[in-house]
Length: 112
Length: 120
Image (tube, one colour):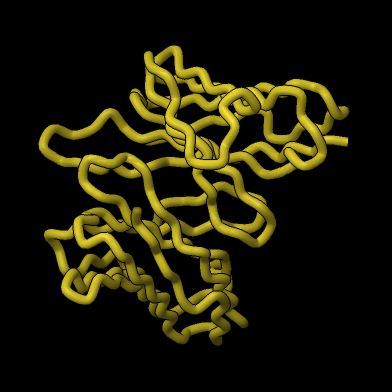
């Protein structure tokens, strides 16, 4: 089955800096890669996703890149703000399978 | 759009009690819903996939007789933790996947607020 590795486990940045979280996946057939943000005690919220037919996707301060050859994808957050502090999870899904395999999460701390 | 409602948000009960958790998709039809368990500071662990009108598919190691899942309609799935014990205490989260857009596989999953279950 699919295996998703996520790094780093924690990331501390100063407000205004950029943050990058990286994930690798094992199943070359995986074609859908969402990113979720989870604040303490709350639901995971979908913040951006990318499909395998696209190499990059951007939504304001958030961008995701996908390298199918290397089987890795990354989340980029620019101009970070304290409210960006949360745990971020990457995930991967294969065609024909409805389940998501999640990474272990990255705790992002943005200091004012 | 894509709102998922989960109730109750918090349950505290005695050992041996059965607890039912509801997951509803409010503004879309969900042929597939998912139940996850999340331990503190850990990732989401898929317990089972709930398919409307058919039996749930359980992940390896999850006891189907312990965690009963029913998905009787396109907007409602329930998880019942039977004869709960302290080791069942956890954060349980459901998610729902939209019925789908023709020609596009793997629609996003949208999560409920979760249920914090505490068994005394």
